[in-house]
Every structure is written in C-alpha cells, then in structure tokens.
Length: 164
Image (cartoon, rainbow, N blue to C red; front, side, top):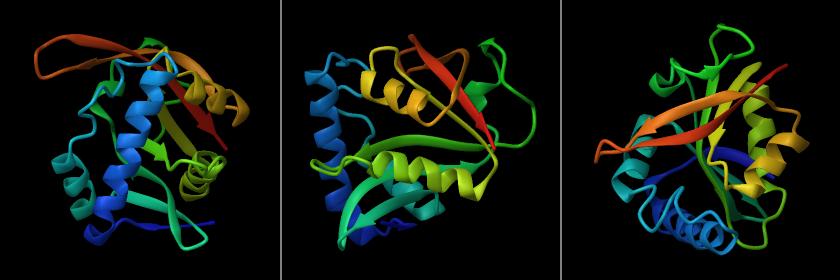
C-alpha cells in the first residue's frame, strides 16, 4: 500500500467510499456519527484543494481516504479529560475504507504517525470498528470532546492521542 494526496479526479471514488462507510456505520450500530450526509462533497473538495485529503492505494485502487494535517483543532481545545501533552500534533479526520480493504485504515493511521510523532483523533462512542482500531494501534483514550453541529446541537466524541 502507498499514500498520496487526493486529487479531484479521485472524487467520485472517494464519495463512493464515504457512502459505503455511512451504510457500514448504520448497519453496525452507529447511525448518528455520519448519517447520510457526512462528510458533504463540498468539505471533501475543500480538503483536496487545501492538500489535507489523502488516499491509501492498494493494487492501483483507492483503498481508504482520510484527512490529515498538523494543526490546532478548535474542538480539541476543551476536553473533559486531559491530553497526553500540549505539543504540536497531527489531526486525523474523516477516515474511511473501501469494501474488502481491511487493514487500509490501520495503514493510513500508521502512515500519519510517520509524518508526525504526536497524533490526535476522535470518534463516536458507537463506532465499534474505530474504537477497536484505536486499541489495536495503542492510542490512549484521553477524554471527551464536543462537536457543535450547524443546528447548535452538541455531539460527544471520544478523544484519543498517540505519541511516538
């Protein structure tokens, strides 16, 4: 597998992967995290244009897609708990894999760890697959962060960090 930046030509396949992930989450008991609309195509396009969207390639096919950037995530400023440190960190968001591409998510997250030694990520409490992946990759559960939706509703997320 390899990682490269996502291009606008990848957009149809990337949106297919996100649609698969939405359905997978619903079927596995996590209907609220992404629903039918997250991430919206305009957000994915903005990620691509900003150079923060990446794809994992396996046998010349897009196996996974994710957002990665070294930045301060505004929703991580307030945590019910405590981060492992206050050093600069890389953020992973919107990670999803294609059907029959087990291992692509782990590969992508491990790649991010090679780009920066301090990684933060969050997920919904009902996202059993991601929670298992966080455990398998030795991330530390640091607490709860809150995401505010456009309608003003706050949504709880479990926050994780890994320091290499």
